[in-house]
Image 1 (tube, helix red, strand yellow):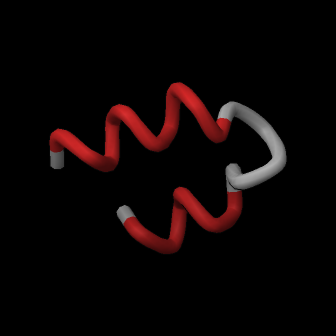
Image 2: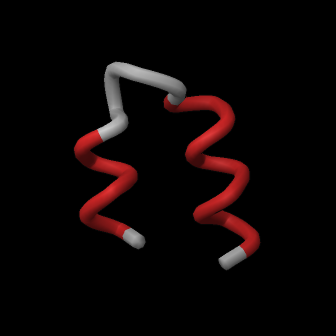
Image 3: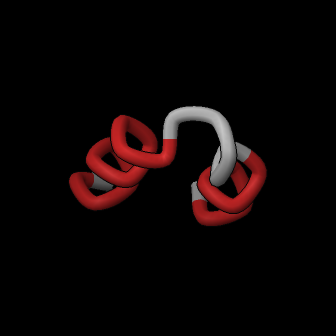
Length: 23
């Protein structure tokens, strides 16, 4: 999921970060 976070860095960084943090 790290790759997805980098891809969505400019999309929903805040929401994506929370999802990745829990993963």
